[in-house]
Length: 400
Image 1 (cartoon, rainbow, N blue to C red):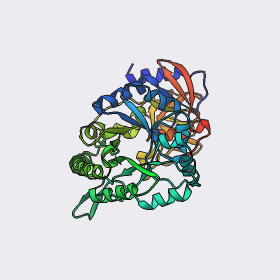
Image 2 (spheres, rainbow, N blue to C red; image 1 turned 135 degrees about the vertical axis):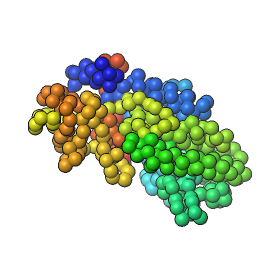
Image 3 (cartoon, rainbow, N blue to C red; image 1 turned 180 degrees about the horizontal axis):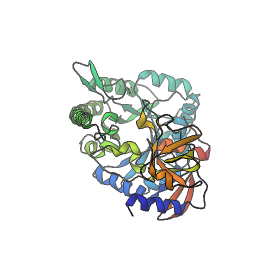
Image 4 (cartoon, rainbow, N blue to C red; image 1 turned 120 degrees about the vertical axis):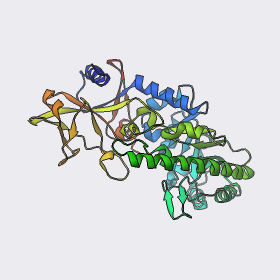
């Protein structure tokens, strides 16, 4: 029996008492992936990106392991919720326009001490001040550096359009603007190199593109390491007691952690290892998060239909944003239909061995977005479900 066939048998046995659709996390794989992230971080703490987990029980499981420290959140409402739940180190990775959230943050000493907000424009300080509603707590601020690689005098840009702050002088100027502003304190700097951490460099059947990606990423790492160090020096001239410099992502943990200027790395997707992380040469993880859909029709030879399945991931639309049929191996989408809103036809010889009520296991394209489709995750150890825990959705928390 192959390893995949063995996993399928385990998952089927573990969840035989449950009705599909359902989602699981294989805890052995989750823990092995966590250990790999810590190993690649080389002694620097790993901050868990909550958007890639979206389950408090599994956030807590990761944070309980040596080598992990703090959460990187994705909305202010989520940040406050996590802080009220006991997390004392929450870095909000994106600017917010949540006025009610800022009023709550500025009025509560415990929340203000636990949550750090993201700023890359003095106008964001104006919004926070206008929302304070009398709250006088000092707001902890992290500045975000644009990590994009700019070529040919800036005519070509590689990387996400995030912060407008690209040069050391630009970041330092915003640091000075925050320092001059009563009620704010710069405590950190963040730089997420998504074009390195979030882009696979070994795409099956695309050798030339893969080589081009590897060359681009090598150049981007060199450029960013030099520029990030210069930015940190410039900011420390304004804020000598800077608490942290955050960088990285699952795909670049070991490279970013190797920079002297970086004090911590961020990662989250590497705990679940969704399908987009199959295309990396820098690490190999174990798929930990999966969902199962039941076979409800057998429309012909070499074909079955499962219930549901239209769970595309965010990002530029394309086939790589779809979940992938994983177990049994060898199934594929009907190109005329793809992954359907209510039902999904699957083709391939393994379909002939599937009966009505059997289940097909899928991997989502991205990590935490799976949890927006399911209200619970069944935690599997060996061939047993040992616990069932709510996702954010299961706790009634849909932050975006």
